[in-house]
Image (cartoon, rainbow, N blue to C red; front, side, top):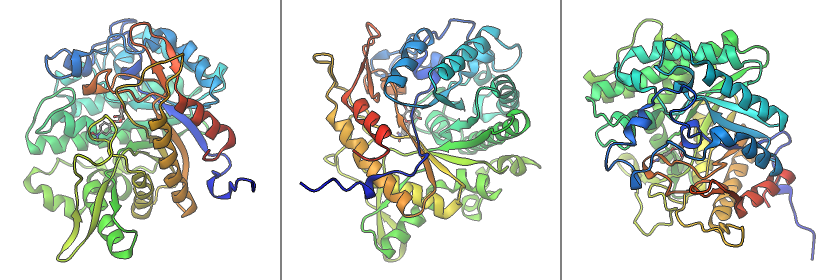
Amino acid sequence: MPPLSTTNSTFPDQFVWGAATAAPQIEGAAFAGGKGESIWDRYCRIPGRILKGDTLDVACDHYNRFREDFALMRSLGIRNYRLSIAWPRIFPKGDGPVNQAGVDFYHRLFDALAENGITPWVTMFHWDLPQALEDRGGWTDRVTVDAFATYADTIVKEYGGKVKNWITLNEIRCFTILAYGPRVNAAPGRTVSPQQLNETYHNALLCHGHGVRAVRAHGGKGARVGLTDNCDTPIPVTETEKDIAAANAWFVERNLHILDPIYRGSYSPDYLARVGKDAPTVKPGDFELISAPTDFLGLNIYTGFFVRACPGAKYEDLGTHDSYPRADSKWLKITPQAIYWGLRLAHENYGPKEIYVTENGCGYDDEPVVNDEVLDLHRRDFLRGYLRELLRAIQDGVPVKGYFVWSLLDNYEWADGYTRRFGIVHVDFETQARTPKLSSRYFAEVIKLNRIV
Ligand code: PNW
């Protein structure tokens, strides 16, 4: 047998491999250590909102088990870890007095990461808004922007010596449109007017700007910062000029309200025409703050939409039938090409210096532990297919510098509770036992050899 050719499956040297989580989804201890109530702590108790009525109270009990979890990561060779800080652990009321026990917790956590040789990538905000701020208007009001500015300054000053990679906010469109839009499926679950909804994006963009400002002011030497967006991602049905042009038009239309302000310092005329009288209020200085240069763009890419050229229109969006292959997460069609086109179109339209895939993965319900194993071949296949397309993007010149699998652990999948499992490590939510799945062994091998295996 001839030797395996690995030329086309090897990643660049220094490629960053990691795993991602978020505080509210894994920490538990929702009311311990002086932590304040978050909007999710409140929302998960509204009957009918969460599958099986699951709460975040205990989750993976990572608050008490982080040392064990980091040892497991180390054993898998995962040297980069994207996590988030729980705002209500630092400021239980959103602003006002700092909770020293919360501050101390993350110091212990960052120290434990360092002891295991794992580099932290810290998201400042992954959806757990302090409930007290929601009570004062939440994302519809600039009170949240002012509070975030103080929060960002506080955590960057506190942890800047231990954390060099900062992500401001996770997926603006999820905690705004899904939370305040017409069909709510996320906390706080409060439908507001179209104009108010546009204010929520704008306020989130302002917070991003404050996150960048805080890192520049207090991050110290070598500190870097960027946003994590989940751009909507088209896939041209054929990779031909006309379908690619259609996909590009679709990409711009669906993503410009987040990426234009950040990369171009304004809302585009197309966006302003679309929102008309419902445009957000822009105050002097807003765009200077929002568009301050960043070091990288984080993209969470899970799924794509098929698009083709259409006579007389910019594109045709094809939709998919129910029988199209998908994960158990209903929205997650298995579309490896989404990662190629998401990365490529973000690069071509906005030209970020570097791009990191800050999340990619898949959620399944039935992943039994048998003889101490979880044979999640579906996830192994998913990751392999997406990594192939990620590598193709790199080979075609997109500056992708890293990849974080979502997620290290099975965890609280928001409105889907504990039913949809995204981990490469299985969690038994009765006993809190961790069992590395086959996909974690697969991923460990990819990391070790720096190539698709
Ligand atoms: C991301 N959609 O959310 C989040 O950043 C994670 O916290 C989450 O657990 C993970 O992806 C898996 O869902 C998304 O409906 C949630 O398209 C929903 C969608 C996209 C991303």
